[in-house]
Amino acid sequence: MTKVIETSTPASALASTLSSIPSGSVFILTDTTVEKLYLNQIAAAVPQAQCIVLPAGEEHKNLESLTKVWEFLSTHGGTRSSILINLGGGTITDLGGFAAATFKRGIRTINIPTTLLASADASLGGKTGINFCGLKNEIGAFHDPEAVILSSSFFRTLPDTEILSGWAEVVKMALITPGIPYTPQQIFDINPLDLDSDVSELLKIAVESKRDITTRDPHEHGIRAFLNLGHTAAHAFESLAMQRHTPIPHGIAVAHGILLALTLSDSAHLPAASPFVDTANPSVASPLVDTANPSATALLSDTANPSVASPLVDTVNPSATALLSDTANPSVASPLVDTVNPSATALLSDTANPSVASPLVDTVNPSATALLSDTANLPAASTLSGRDLAKSYSEFLKRTYPSLPFTKADAHHLAELMLHDKKNQTAGTIRFITLPTVGYPAITPFTLPQIEATLLPLLN
Ligand SMILES: NC(=O)c1ccc[n+]([C@@H]2O[C@H](COP(=O)([O-])OP(=O)(O)OC[C@H]3O[C@@H](n4cnc5c(N)ncnc54)[C@H](O)[C@@H]3O)[C@@H](O)[C@H]2O)c1
Image 1 (tube, rainbow, N blue to C red):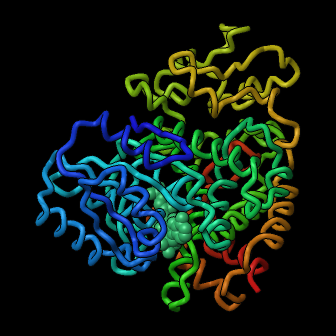
Image 2: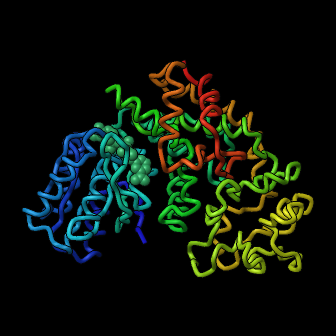
Image 3: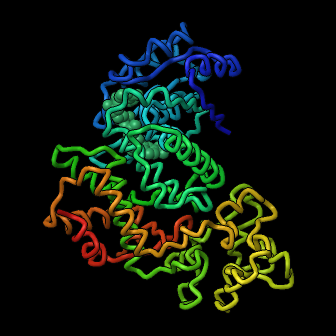
C-alpha cells in the first residue's frame, strides 16, 4: 500500500523514505518549470540521483516524452531495482508513473506532487498514462507508487489558474464524500487562493477520501468511477479546446463539468431526500444500484474482501446481504437492494429511528461503512435538494472560475464528444456520474438530446 507522507520539508522526507526502501539507481523526473524552482532542493537529498527534465505542460504527456524517459533509464543504468522519483504536477506523475510501470516490466516510483491538483488527486491511486492520437490518457496502466510525499510548501509558486484547477478536484472529492464536516455552502465560500487552513483541511479530506476509494476499488470496477464526477464533460471540453489549440487546465474543465453533472442530476429528478432510496418512486430503486447496467452493481462490492462477493447486492444469494443486516432487527434481510420488493428498501432510511446505529454497517469490512454512513447523522445541509445544490454550485463557479471558451453553437459537438467517449457509452446513452445528494453519487444514463439541452444554457 502506498505510504502517504505530509510534510513541510519534502527533501528530508524523501531522504528518509529512500533509506527505508532498498534500491539500485535513483532517477528524478521533472519538467522545466519545476526544475528551476525545486530540483536543487530535492536532488540535494539524493546526491546520487540522475535527473530527467521534460518540457512543461500537458501537451508533452505523449509518446515522445515517454520514449525520452525510457531511453534515459535504459542508457543510464536503470535496472529492475531502480526507483523513479516523479517531481511535478499530474503530467509528470502520470507520465513518469507509466514509464515506471513499463520499464523492465515495472520499477518502483515515489511521487512528489508540486501542484494542488496532483497533490489532491493525480499522484494518488495508481492511474498512470499518456495522451495518444488526440485522446486523453488513451494509453496507461495501474501502477501504485511506493510513497507520495505531499507538501503544501510547493503551492506558493503556483499561478492562480493552477490553484483553481486543483481546487476543482478538491471540491469534487468533498462533494462525493459523505459526512464531511463542511456543508456545500461552506465549501463554496472558501477562496482557494487564500491557501489558509480551510484549504489544507479540505485537501486532507480529499486525499483521505481518494485513498479510501482507490484502496477499496483499485481498478475501477465500482465505486472508483465516482471519482469521475464532472469528468465526462471535462474530457469533451479539454478535447475540443485542444483541437482548437487553446488548451484549458484539466481542473478548470472539471469545475465546469461538475456543473453539467449537477444540472443533469437535478433534471433527472433523482431522489434528493434519501441518498439510498426514492420511497416516492421505488422504481428508481436506489442510486446505489446502477439499474441501467446491473453488472455495475459491483460498485458496492467489498473490494477489500473480494471473496465476499458484492455483499450489498447479492441478488443470487440474498442471504449474504445479512452482512448488512439491521443489527437492531436482524431478521430483516436484504435491506439495500430488494428489487423484488422495493418497499423493503425503506429500511434503509430509518430516519424515524436514528438511534438504530448505521443499519448499513459492513461488518466484514467496517471501514467500508464510510460510503454507507448513517443518513440520520449526516449534516443537515447534505439534504440540499438537487436543484439548490446545482444553483449554489453554479454561483460558486461563476464567482471563482474563468468561463469556458465555448459558445452555444458548440453544444452539439461537445455532447457528441461525450457520447463518443466509449468508456461512458451504453446502448446509445452516456453514463454520467450524478449527485442526487451530496456524499452519495450515482450513475445515470442520458441521451444525447438530453445532454445537449442541459449543456446549452450553461454555455455563453
Ligand atoms: N492519474 C490520475 O488519477 C489523475 C487525476 C487527475 C488528473 N490527472 C492528470 O493530471 C494532469 C494535470 O495535472 P496538473 O494540473 O498538475 O498539470 P501539470 O503537471 O501540467 O502542471 C501544470 C503547470 O504547473 C507547473 N508547475 C508544477 N508545479 C509547480 C509549482 N509548484 N509552481 C509553479 N508551477 C508549477 C508545471 O510545470 C505546468 O506548467 C492531467 O494530465 C490529468 O489528466 C491524473
